[in-house]
Image 1 (cartoon, rainbow, N blue to C red):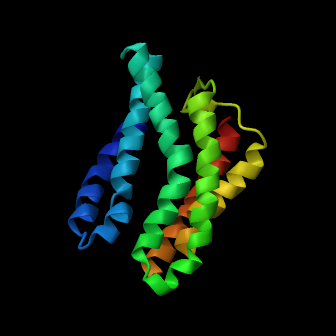
Image 2 (cartoon, rainbow, N blue to C red; image 1 turned 45 degrees about the horizontal axis):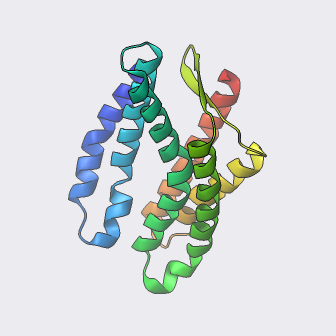
Length: 181
């Protein structure tokens, strides 16, 4: 819980700086990513607190579903859309297939998160969210392609670097996740 609280708090000034740099509406979705990630971390703090009995069960349940909704169905569509909006019109075709893929992934994962039971399992250094995902490796690969592919296909070096750093981060998370759970 402490790591989530620290990460969420550390992301707030990054979000403020990022949003302050917005010059057009097209930039807003991408600039809002640090804020979305901060909210994501704070929601997991509420999930931890719910497991400890420090918040009402309804609040913990809402936090858990909202946390998963951001992580699973929101990002596969949101990230490619944010990147697409930054691109000049003539370059958007490079990113559009990743948005289409993201919409498919988001639709399936929204169904999983919103219409199925989810169990939160506490481990010493993290929480595991157990759900009914059919063919989880397939959906994980499609998710990664949608979320990472769009930035990697951007015409802006900084956005490509963002995609590459996220790919490295996803690999590290996958390694830690598989070792922890």
